[in-house]
Length: 481
Image (cartoon, rainbow, N blue to C red):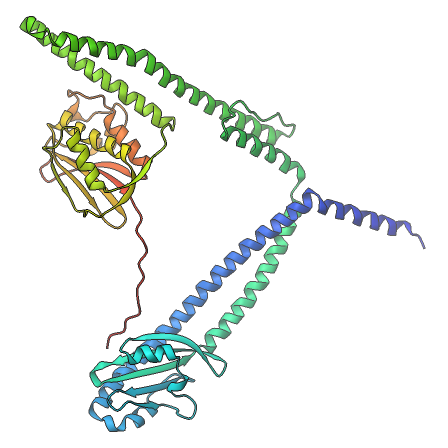
């Protein structure tokens, strides 16, 4: 007998075992466990959803029948209380179900099948709560079988009705579904292992390099790049990835240089000009009327220039992601009111639907910028704000600023939130054209949005909506006869 084929088979088996202990084995384990976790999760959700649906459907049918039986007893016993026992015996319940009636005045129980099921077989908690006047339901076991009991208080005849119905059919259906899902989990796990076994090591190595480089870049190492790949497809991936990193690095550097250049090249001369204007302000009365007009123009344009520079600096910081949010627990209405008063807008009518105990978590600095920019926008472009409102419900909070200006045309309502955009009605007014863009940026940073509508007087209504979460509320079973 030739032993060479046997030795070759053993050698091949040892090689496969070594491969399974290496990278390929870990991939098989990973894919198998992933498939198993996904299959188990899906199966658990499917089983839980199906079980809940079937039990709810079963409960709804039984509840409807129990309520009908209770209403029938209410009619029959109300006119013939002495025959309560015969009436309960003849009541129509589900196959395998049981009914029990309790008359409060006589303190007597009547069972539909007293030799098999009485009030002593009912769950004690359900029995106690129903006799106390509360409707309810409870699942329990009787003779090793699952049941659900329903207790209904019939106040008009001083009685309490109990009905227990079996859940055997639901249990059998759930057992079949459970067996099918277990077989599906095993099959999906095997398929996942085969998929992991077929995955090539040559694909994983470059992906690991991409992940490593991406991690370094996310940590701030923008000079890290992928090495060239021999495989054409992987070479394209490496080239595209490196080009993307180059573009991101270039963009960040441009933004950084922009903020730095604006800070040094614009802020300093603007500050000097503003200081010179303040010095000249004290000698304004010495100038001729024509020169005073020219001086007023220079003064207003210097202030406008200073405001534009500040807005540009703020937008550049927002674009670069500088200045993390500093959230605090505040009363939004109180904060908005204090901001308006502090910046000279106390004459604007303020209203709110929030109570004094309404608390939410927000960044006070961002809220202040939103409110101030909206009020200044109304002052510069619409003659001033006429109303400042703070409203809210269980899911959102709103800051509303209204004015009596010409309003915003429908075609311009989205564009005015762009940078340097102006509405038709405010083209000749002062302002940098960046205020509403800053409002939108801060609103987005707070998880909200800003938009404009038309108010009842024809002016503009600027709205900033911010999301908030409220605790869940739960309900109780209620049955009314």
